[in-house]
Amino acid sequence: MIDHFTLKVSDYKRSREFYLRALAPLGYQAVMEFEGMGGLGVKGKPDLWLSQDPANVRPMHVAFAAPDRKAVDAFYAAAMGTGAKDNGPPGIRKDYHPNYYGAFVLDPDGHNVEAVCHRPEKPAPAPARERR
Image (cartoon, rainbow, N blue to C red):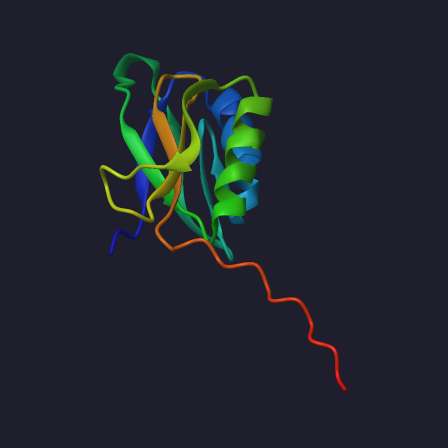
């Protein structure tokens, strides 16, 4: 299990705002902040660190687990609302596995950011039956 990781970014403040908005549907919040860097996470534990280091930005792929498909959709909408570039709208990716539901965007530095749910879609609740 990964405890935390750091993305090098060209503009910390810009990236902080992008990630706070894009990852809000997954429960992420700002947890710690220092000069030119900060940690975001869920329930007070930072697992995503952003560090301003323009000379060393190397775009990478990072995927965040979503609890359900609605959260993947909400991540995508929030990220696109920040001006992110589409890199694959929400949908099933059968080449990975039959229930792989993901969405991909490019952040301000070109990092390929994904939200993914591996669970099958929940069936709609059955209509209530009439009592006789």
